[in-house]
Image (cartoon, rainbow, N blue to C red; front, side, top):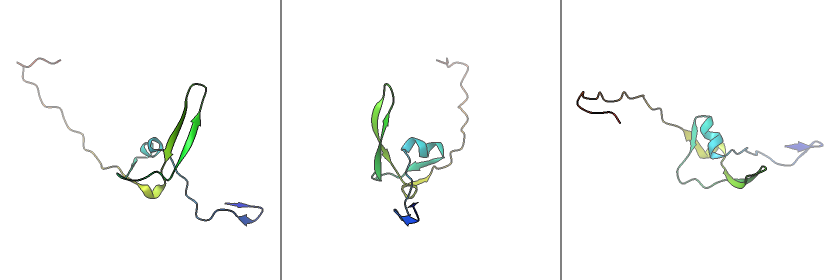
Length: 78
C-alpha cells in the first residue's frame, strides 16, 4: 500500500470472515486463531466478527450426492 510514493505496509493480506470464505468454497482450518477482528454496525445489529487470511483456509472436501434409501411399502413416511 502506498501513499505519495511512500510504502506504508509491505506484503499485507486481506482477511475475510468465516462466512465470506465459505461462499468461495473454502473453510477455516481447525484450530486457527483469527488474524484480527472487525466491527459491523447497522441500524439493529452491532457486533464484532473474526477475520481470517488466505493462509488460514483450506478447500472444502468434495462431497458426492447420496441417494436416499428406498422405503419399504410397510414403512410410513413422516
